[in-house]
Amino acid sequence: MKGMLDMARLSWDDMVKKYPNLWVAVKDAEMDGADIVSGEVVTARPDKEMRKFRIEHRGAGFVFRRTSECGFNGHITSNLRIRID
Image 1 (spheres, rainbow, N blue to C red):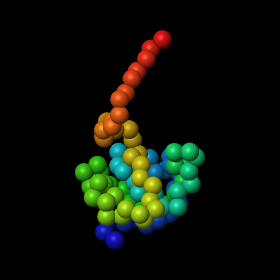
Image 2: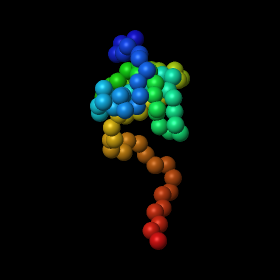
Image 3: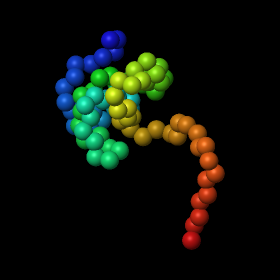
Image 4: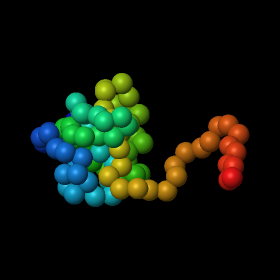
């Protein structure tokens, strides 16, 4: 599969160091709630390439995360209220 990496188990911190500012697809992810603890990185890609990869590999069981924070990418589909007391 094009763009696939040698899959060695990495901690999330190692993924962030090795693939800065990229999206990673992680196989066999060990999770702590919504956070990845460790897993095998299948691919690491920039924003513009990850959407296509996600569509092509829907249902493969990968967990997708960006290794650094990025701006909001999506939409809100309900009413949102913010209350400050």
